Length: 184
Ligand SMILES: Cc1cc2nc3c(=O)[nH]c(=O)nc-3n(C[C@H](O)[C@H](O)[C@H](O)COP(=O)(O)O)c2cc1C
Image 1 (spheres, protein in one colour):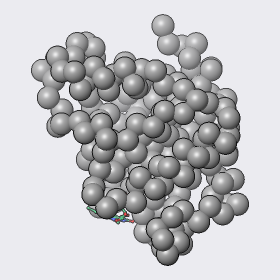
Image 2 (cartoon, protein in one colour; image 1 turned 180 degrees about the vertical axis):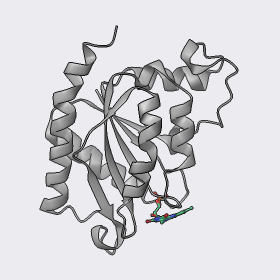
Image 3 (cartoon, helix red, strand yellow; image 1 turned 30 degrees about the vertical axis):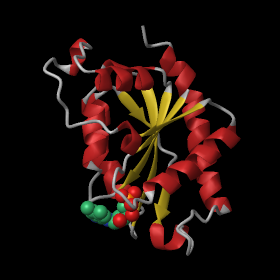
Image 4 (cartoon, rainbow, N blue to C red; image 1 turned 120 degrees about the horizontal axis):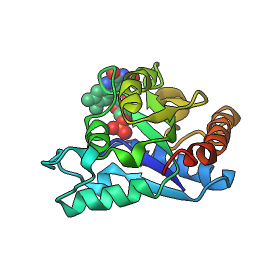
C-alpha cells in the first residue's frame, strides 16, 4: 500500500489538485494499491498526546485512526508545498504524532512551489525523516506552479512530469518489499 500524504490544509490550496494528479500516476503505475492521506480531511489537532509516540500508546481516537492508516502503508509520497523555504506545519505535526508507523519505510517527494519547485522544503524535511527511520529516495517530482499548472489550475501532465513520477514510483516499489523484511 502506498500512502500519498497531501501536506497542505489551506482553503483554496493547490495541494488537492496535485495530490489527485499524483494519485492518478500511482494508480496507473500499478506497483501499489494507493491510499490517499489528505491532512485537510484528516483534520488532526496540534499534537495532543501525553505519552511519547515511541510508546505507541495513543489516548485519542484521531491518533489511533492516523496510526492505523499510516501503519497499513509500505511506502509514502509526500505531496508537499514549500512554505517560507521549508515544509508545512501540518506535515510536521502529522509526522510528530507517530513513530513506529514510519520506520523502515521508503518515502518519495512530489514537491511544489515557485521557481524552487519546493525543493528547499524537501531538503528541510530530511532530518525529520531520518529521525523516524524513513528512507528518502532520490527520484522525485518537482512542480513549478507557474510552469506546471494550466490556466484552470490543473497539472499540465507533461511527459517530463509523468516520467519523473514513474521513476519515483519505480524506486519506491523496489525498496518497499526490501525494507518490509526489516520490520518485525
Ligand atoms: C505561508 C506561505 C509561504 C510560502 N512560501 C513559499 C516559499 O518559501 N517558496 C515558494 O516557492 N513558494 C512559497 N509559497 C507559495 C506556495 O508555493 C503556493 O502558494 C502554493 O500554492 C502553496 O501550496 P498550497 O496551495 O497547496 O497550500 C508560500 C505560500 C504560503 C501560503
